[in-house]
Amino acid sequence: MIGDKPSENTKRKLHLYFAAVFLFNKGKSHPQVIEILSAFDSDNALVETIVDKAMHEEWDKLYEEGRQMFSNGMIYTDVVKVIAEKESDQEIAMWICKTWYELKTMYMECLIESPTNIFEGLKGVIVCSLGTLLMFLIDSSLILKGIWIAALVFSLAQWIVGLQQRDISYRIKSLFALDE
Image (cartoon, rainbow, N blue to C red):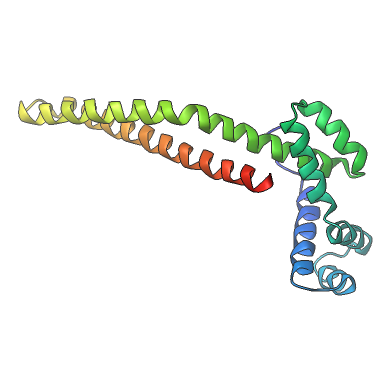
């Protein structure tokens, strides 16, 4: 369930929804949005239903409600039940809950792992830099130099991953701040 990619049908509905919201934000009227989106999707009933939901930003409101329930400590399955009662399309209800849950999970993973990766990576870069320098100073074999250089590259990669995780956690935290 969590981690699954949305189905093609769900993607199609989401694309229509986000396109409709975009068009409404650009000042298009309800009939204009239906006409524009009908050119991209032959299921006129689906287009009209999604445009109606987009006009009132129903999925955005459900997403916000799900976010609020998660922040109040409700567990995933309970949030899904509440959202599924309010959204007739179960795939969309699942997507709304799953998206927020995955975002929050990624935030927690990055927040917890980044300091360790930064510290361990930086420690490895320092040790491996000194080790590599020493291998060149004592003119050791190419194999030893290669091992120390490889360890240096891996340590550098771990440090960079830690920095990226920290950046991701800051960006997600700013999204949380915008939602409040």
